[in-house]
Amino acid sequence: MFALFERFLTPTAAPEHPEPPGGLIAFLWHFARQAKWLFAALFIIECLVALSDSSVPWFMGRVVTMVTKTPPDRFLAAGWPWLLGMAIVVLIVRPGVTLTRYLITNQAIAAPFTGLIRWQSHWHVVRQSWAFFQNDFAGRISNRVMQTGPSVRSTLTATITTVWYILVYGTSAIAMTAAADRWLAIPIVLWFCSYAGLLFYFVPRMRERSKVSSIARSTLMGRIVDSYTNILTVKLFARAREEDQYVRSAVDQHVGMLGASQRLLTVFGALIDIFNAFLIAGSGALALVLWRYGAVEVGAIAMVLPLTLQLTNMSRQIAMRITEIFEDLGVVQEGMLTIAQPLQLPDPDGARTLTVRDGRIDFKNVSFGYGRETGVLQNFNLTIHPGEKIGLVGRSGAGKSTVVNLLLRFFHLEGGAILIDGQDISGLTQESLRGQISVVTQDTSLLHRSIRSNIRYGKPDASEDDVVRAAKLAHAHDFILDLEDWQQRRGYDAHVGERGVKLSGGQRQRVAIARVILKNAPILVFDEATSALDSEVEAAIQSSLGTLMAGKTVIAIAHRLSTIAQMDRLVVIERGRIVEQGTHRELIAHNGHYAALWRRQAGGFLDAVDMQAAE
Image (cartoon, rainbow, N blue to C red):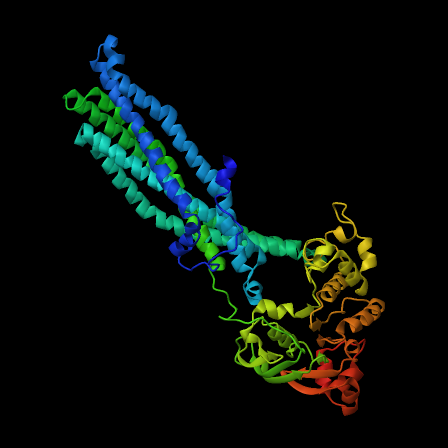
């Protein structure tokens, strides 16, 4: 039975409408409609629960009335229908509908629906642009994805199980007391009006303070994760105290905002208790007065007292649940700041799949400046012929990495076009574009998975022999065989830690190169790909890279000029424009920028002094 309810939803199915809308109600409905039949069933069940709960005091009143008016020897003969009805409600109906409610909320909704929201939120967020993740804490983004799921689910279920329940129960209570005498309904009606007034005043304030508190909590989470992610830097610079202060300020801010929310809860709860006391006293006193003057039967007292007592008991729970609803709404609204954001760099409608025939790349009048008026690249023109290997040379900030980032379509061009074999990359799917380009960067980070999984990331269906062959070409096979992680997994099964921290910089770089070798894309980009390697290993890998680069179009960036001197053409970039290009020999003979850099470079590294001397 449990499995039946747990299979109503498939949490990780591909979303039909992946982008969540921006409005709060629309955002909630975006997920709720995917389980609308479950919520409709819960709506009906909750109505039955409320009716069964309210019917018990009514039966009790009827029984008490019969006890006072019927002789004991005739009681069972006259009262068996009421006793039977009460037994059916108490022993069968109420347990049955309550069990069904638990199955729907706990089995069908709790885990599957929460998982569905988290999965679809992640599915959307992970497709955001690279810049999206550069502008926020990874910890805060992940916290929002994780917290929004339970909050959306709790908001929807609590609204039905709490608000709808009390509306049905309260309406039934008013109807039953009014049926005995219309004056008996007045205390309950007045209590409802007072209760609604409290909610009207307090709930919006609770929601706003909850939203602010949730934002503060995510900021705290982001700062903590930021410290943990960069723990080596914290240790190297002995900055534990500064990190304490950095996190302490976020803790203090969160505690202060949470305290403000709790003040509202305290005042709200105290006022609810006062109103409840007046409801019980007023209803009981009025019922006794009406009974004293013969307006109602004694059974009315037996019905009113448990009705109001149960209503006041529920009001405390419901008050807390309503505040939780709006706390959850605050979390949802805060999560929407990340989740309900349109994709910053979507594929255009009708985007085509890239087909690489020759590997020719054309930059035509490309302009880009990260939104600044003075662009990094201005009317940049460069043609890379099929199978050509070029090296980009220039100081930091000259625009070399920007050229690569635009080729990978990490940003929208501000002007011009980039073509691959005559195909404008702005009209291509990003997945197909990056699938045809292999990149090895200087700051290589690996996934916290096994060595095998990291290498196979370049080609998921690669065989074990292909993985080992790529590792050998990258001169990584030998050190991989010696690896053992904290769970005694060895060799290619060993896990590398978050961002590959269990490996040295050179080892991470060789695994990354193995991944690129296995991918075997027709266009290769090396951004300081061998900077973390010692000279002996670099020389050994260069021969492997020579085999890898054969017949492919290659773009290489290196500050150490000796690593790219053998390229077919070197392109010298300064302030977003090409100032020289040619082979190493030609540029040395030209005695310009590149020649000055080559002569002045100590150890093969390029710096600002070199560039100033060249100018």
